[in-house]
Length: 301
Image 1 (cartoon, rainbow, N blue to C red):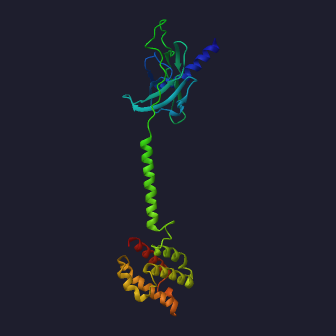
Image 2: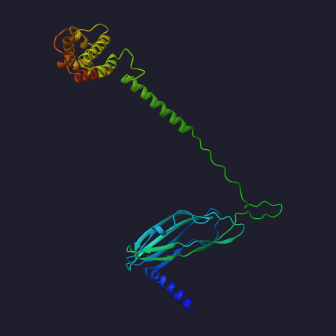
Image 3: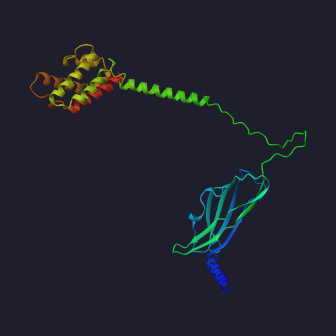
């Protein structure tokens, strides 16, 4: 007898903290009948917790299977303060039943375990209320012999096949427009396969100058020759410094570059026929910048 009394005292002592810190708990639920296979329902638990204790949300179950026939779809917590200064938690747990009974039967949703802590090692636990409901089988109503029932189970509705023709046409048009835009950009910038066209000699010369101009005096001369060949191709003949005025008069897009073009022709004459190094008159960076400016002006001509 003394052993039973001791056990009862232990139980009361362990329950006392929960009763002291969890002031009130209640649950609201839908009507407990008429639930069928696949139905979704929500159980709402309200818990009032005395300060400084707080609900430990990590102790609540996570969405997923609860039993072989019951899934927890989601769980949300809303916190507020009661007029008495306690913290009120409203826990909404959404479940879905997958139980397929052969006849009407009662099922019970397991209760939530409520854990509160004070952040200093204090802890109290309590179980929320469990909930039972009646679930029924999905069966057709027995029909009278020889008579059809309007309430019999019907076959599943066929899925609607939505035409994707409009989306396919739109995607094809967008893809075609993208390819056309890329082709026009490649043609404008003289990218392959348009980089070898004779109508854009300065674009090819700019790439050659970028490779050659900074390789010393010899590289500068090779770069200058590439640029001279571009001028010759644009003029349709050998273009000398004395012919620049006539050449530029027929190409207005090059007029703003006239001082730099004349500087290049003078530097080239010094490089090939004079004693002073051409780099001293037009550095490689300026030669490269001129070739790129000529290529840009060529695109607008």
